[in-house]
Amino acid sequence: MFSNKYVKQRIEKAEELNKLGLQPYENRVERDCLATEFIEKFNYVRDLENRRDEEKSCKLIGRIKFLRLMGKASFMKIEDSSGTIQIYVSRDRVGADWFKDLKKIVEVGDLIEVEGFPFVTKTDELSVNISSFRVVTKAIAPLPEKYHGLQDKELRYRQRYLDMIMNPDVRDTFKMRSQIVSIIRHFFENRGFLEVETPMLHPIAGGANARPFITHHNALDVNRFLRIAPELYLKRLLVGGFDAVFEINRNFRNEGMDHTHNPEFTMLEYYWAYHRYEDIMKLTEDLFDDLFEKLNLNRTLPVEEQSIDFSTPFQKIPYVEAITTIGEVPVEVANDREAIIKYLEERDLELPANKSLGYLQAELFDNFVEDKLINPTFITEFPIDISPLARRSNEDSQKADRFELFIAGNEISNGFSELNDPIDQYERFKAQLEGKDSGDDEAHDMDEDYIKALMYGMPPAAGQGIGIDRLVMLLTNESSIRDVLLFPAMKPQHHELDNFEKIYEQHEGEK
Image 1 (cartoon, one colour):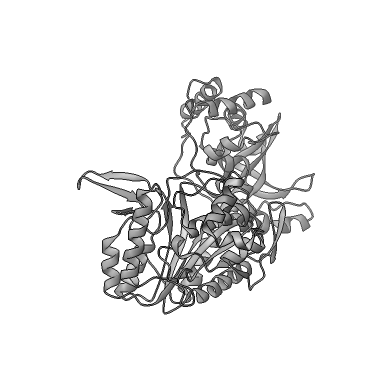
Image 2 (image 1 turned 90 degrees about the horizontal axis):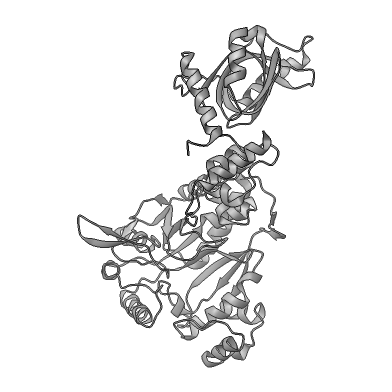
């Protein structure tokens, strides 16, 4: 890592700074303004006759992104969290000795502190004419060459810090992600919901159909599961007397990775006593209205190659109707277990481990419907046997009072009226265990303490989980979940130093 010739050269320059009595990793720094603040504050200089104001002074700190060294003057561009600004260095103002040392020691990538006055160059660029200058952090790894930047997607994900240095617009995505989470948080707080935190380590994996990560607690000598969902703990809080709770936090699922799946991901889950799933659908529409208003977004957004209309209310279609009308599966097939099996086999599609009617219908839905749901669509009336925590419909006991929201061919949320009958819940957990025994490794385990909580009486309620990462993907028009996660999960590399060598090869090409 430190043996590369370019790194060695930069280490030598850091040592030169030490010899000059200067810290290559200074901690005592001052900054009066950011780059964009400087430009806004001193833009009036353009209207002055001499186009400079030597009476004003400002200190800035930024990373050198461009450096052009000349005989008696040099130009740099430094970048901070707000943007870039040009720096003009004159030998006469900083001193001949320091100007000479600067040319030998300073390089692209270094973080520097400068102080100077505003002026406008002959090329009409508002710049900083500096009187003092110092390195506050010496970068000993060279940045990729400036012409091609950092294009390698995998390297960008593995070294997000470098990605953001070379591609500042990436930071905009994560700023918007932070805004989205903040808007969501205030949306629920303003409606009387209480934000809570529930355990990440669970004694039983429950709350969703998913394969968990397993770890071991040494002091208790017991296995624990990284949570796949907070649902069962949040609903315990309804039993305890809270009327409305929400949590924004991480879930973990030991499953495959693709453009919409990461093993750890962020979910919003909330539960609302004395409300039904229809109320949750309306609240979801209100949430989207709030997001679009606060983010100042157009109601029609590009998502990859599609244009999606986010106008509310969203379309609502029952589950089996979607299979027959959107998926174009014959009606006589969609409601017949044996007919579905034959239909799937004829198309060389894999059969689920659990071959109940609901699970078979889910295969039809996944294969023939989901990717066709482009504009926001609520799918309702899910089969009860794939909805182990949802309340049965009063009109049809084989259906659940449940919905899922689909946008751009992806599930964005899952919500339902909550099952609060402890006996019914116990029987459904038992059925899930039977499915587990027959090969369904994503089925729920029996959570007897949750059943006990229901026995004390949970009020009628409804709840929903919304995938924050997928929501951010939609609102920022990113095609991969990795583009909205600061540090996505990546396949291990046998030779991690290869990443460094790629950068050095690019740097050598620039030289």
